[in-house]
Image (cartoon, rainbow, N blue to C red; front, side, top):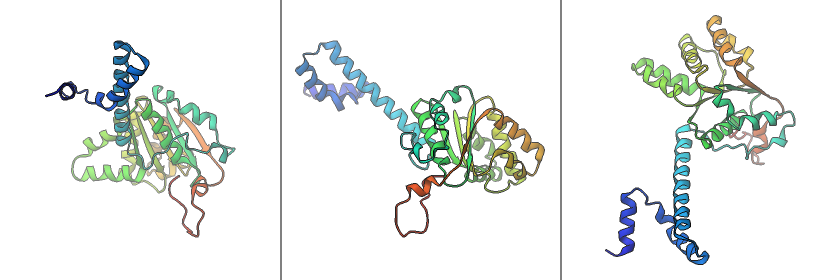
Length: 256
């Protein structure tokens, strides 16, 4: 076995096989710039650290289950002059997650609520937080199935463990007693422990009639609304702006 093959085998044994991806490039750089041994080693170690961080980020993004890759950099803030861009950018710093605060985004359909929610989730993943994105109807359906097969306790932990839970499209229809109990359980368990982002076409004060029990509704909203950043989004449809100009009468579903 020659020296190069021996080095490859040793690096893989040490779980440092990533060194091989940039080894030739760094060797050329070391020779052309007359780098010292320590400088050369530092470059290889830095490459490995960056590779590992990139891998961790990709895993966090995969676990987040976003519908699409949405970022704050990819959002056109100039489209809607009424939008509180400063608040959104401040939220992008993710300090609200450290403070265990929530974010409520509400407004008419298509104004960019889902884009902003997922973009804030993307920022959180970049900052090292665990995120989970889900449609409200999917969350409630998943927990209902858990009641049927006696896996409810295990299933609800999925929504309690991430640093930030994003519930999209809440309030499209009234909640059944079981759905209301499940939603309340998530709010109560995460309150003051971890953050929630909720998007809705309705303002929070209109959520109360969705619950069969107004006492439960007010208790849930008290925990959410009084410990949250409220972002009201008004204006024209951002989704329509992103739609390709064609004869297709159906708008794109990329942004909500």
